[in-house]
Image (cartoon, rainbow, N blue to C red):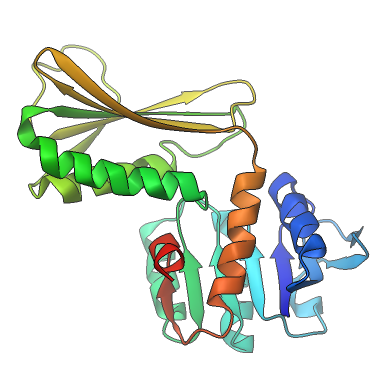
Length: 251
């Protein structure tokens, strides 16, 4: 039984994670931490990690990058596994995650969807097969409340494409004005924000007279919540270190 603490429990994603954890026979919803307090699915919601009386086995964070220090502080102090599902981390944040992973198990991924991680694998393979004969462009679409751009998933896909190419690539974030002819070393990344789009990612490989498109569309945010629960169960009991969806899928 994995005792789960949800950071940002009263937010939209936090509620979904709590709902799935409460219904999962292999999990116990220990409680949550949020700016607001209260109760959800019979579990208490605390104002801070310092108020949590019990030690969780895994903390799932869907709050924001601004809350990272609090999440990692609780995880390292209690040797509690951490599933980081927020986006918009800075270079300093990534260094803090690296340091925390030396003390406890940390699961970090830009996207918890199994489908997206399959897409990542396919993008890497396509880039390796098609090579420099095809230009690579990525278009991501999200709801109008998303704060960071481009999405962490788009960056993850761009990095996979660059890795597959086996050559130096640099990312171009949108284009404006007289930018000149496209450079072969570019990977274009474009962000669309509007309405209630859950998340759509499209990777285009544009060659001479043909285009290959790989895409993924999330129809409900539950795919990310279920991925977080799977990650928490996977990382429970693991030694200190960094883990991601590739480890989960391979495991």
